[in-house]
Image: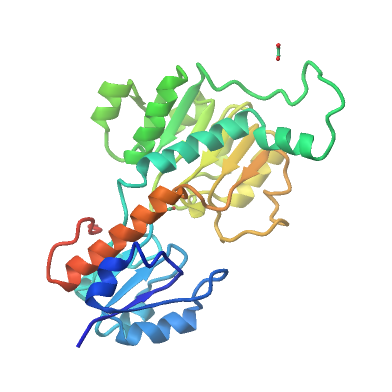
Amino acid sequence: KRPYIYVTRKCSEEQLQPLYEIADVEMWAEEEKPCPREVLLEKVTNADALLTMLSDSIDQELLDKGTQLKVVANLAVGFDNINVQYANEKGIVVCNTPDILTDTTADLTFGLLLTSARRLIEAADYVKDNQWKSWAPLLLAGHDVHHKTIGIVGMGKIGQAVAKRATGFDMKILYHNRTRNEEAETTLGAKFCRFDELLTSSDFVVCLAPLTKETKNLFDLEAFKKMKNTGIFINASRGAVVNEEDLYQALVNKEIAAAGLDVFLHEPIQADHPLVGLNNVVAFPHIGSASLETRYSMMNLCATNIKAVLSGEEPKTKVTI
Ligand code: GLV
Ligand code: GLV
């Protein structure tokens, strides 16, 4: 019997070609909305493999229903939406898409930093809204990026790629991580520091730490208060690493100057989300890895990983915890 693979969101069939060769592939067909939980709970019952999105919760309940399930390939580097430990206990392999999205995500993160510092969205809206009446000395004046200090929290591959971009802007680079990143220290001159030391010394605090028990709510009011009043906070990892009410307070009370956010606690957020109403917040809809090239590569990697596991081979990028 051919294996059955369920794909929870419309993907490019061309990129998933390796799967069509070996299995019956079914894809959630609606372009505009995600596969509802009830549908996924039903589909998993006879699925040999799932290709999932970071917005799907692959929890114990779902894994228990997947009695034939052998592999879950998540279209993301992050895997906090999956109970990996439970999956592994049941012999289910979990795969993610590291490496291929590193530079794309670093570009977006640094772009978000530049956008927040130089008020680029406000500036573009200003022209589109027909508000530009004259040149003025302090019109839309923002903060410099070059020669400032960037503090990167979570110095994995993406953090290191952001640090590399920062060297081109002559920035001083600080970082905090569970373990030292010697390559970043020797090749980029990044300096390891304690979390609170990074907060007090950085002009830009950039969060790229994965969401874990240890990083949940890491950025709370206490953390924001330690930052400079001119400091800018950038988050491109997961929303739950931040206490959003505390961030809102910190922005309103001018504990920090601005924030650039690609991720939120409950996605998608709506325009009436308190943070979005602040003019010193730039909000993006979780597009870190969203270039056509990278998203196609991610789909292809998921397909390659699923094919490997179903063929009894070792997948390229298995999650190990
Ligand atoms: C996106 O957030 C990812 O984890 O790939
Ligand atoms: C700005 O365009 C300047 O010439 O200073």
